[in-house]
Length: 446
Image 1 (cartoon, one colour):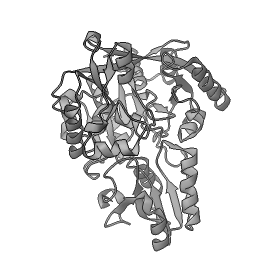
Image 2 (image 1 turned 120 degrees about the horizontal axis):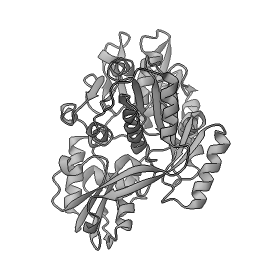
Image 3 (image 1 turned 90 degrees about the vertical axis):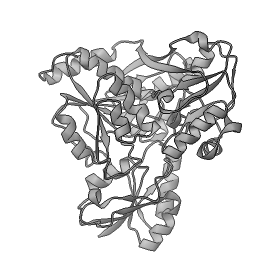
């Protein structure tokens, strides 16, 4: 029995365990590691999910303990199972494992992608923050107009009780509270729910898929980070970002997504430099000469732009886009510039607790506030940071309505952002071919 450590971040690692190692007598997983997401280490993968070989579950430890555990437990194999990491960082981790005496493994799709009984469309990206979520929503809208009923399965974000989160179903906003969702989870689920789409997520994706197949005639895999799909896709759509030219070929597994894609959406061409769009287009075509390329704008809007003009604003952006996504700004900054804010206030002097530590870890951030809320304490610290920052107006550029989740003492406006395709063929054309190919009996149009 080979001893294994799985390097993870509370997502892909659990799926790889479930598909490759659970109930596999040839391997024994001694630990998961944790990174990217705060407060994951120190927990255990519960015995209810781990199977008969693990009556006490599996410990989740800090990634920095990798070498010590390899040597103490005489580990044979280190399995890399998370996403949105540069090629250089990935090989540093591999070097650490190999130097400590273990073998190194990158699981592929053959044994980890589950086969669905209904067609699957996957929407993934080459980095966090490419604008994948509005693309997913746009596809769901198009499918409904064609008379199909999509059900969304979202990449995992199991930050709470793992046994309770094995299979989660979200059909109404109250389900977010029922499942004790973090801000990060609400950001991904709420926009779909608001449009009438049922969302599934959790830990055990074989069980999740069985439930999702009962509710729709097409499964829409809504990927997270830049991870590859957990389900075998029949149509694979990947979003790239010209604000980070070159990242599409220098991050893992984003480059895998790019090379596999049937359709590549070059998003944000309206705000990126033309030379950067050209660079990305060239890299896409070099890696994937047969894929269909669609160029799209990411249109930023607010309900009342006049509220921004001349104001000193605090910009609150999507958290993961700024942190492990590596961006220094997002749609909120674009809105502040577009609609004439007089100044952007720097929230760093007013940050508290884990929010202050986030700025220390990601020094590229200055006059923006990442909406971090992985637990109740961090949510309170985010609220306190916002309310302590002296400004005329808070610009909320998160997919979730922070005004509903937090008590904001200052006036605030929400920023919306949706894709606007500017080239042909468009996603509608691609989806018409998909619908015709599978010739399923659609439900009545919504």
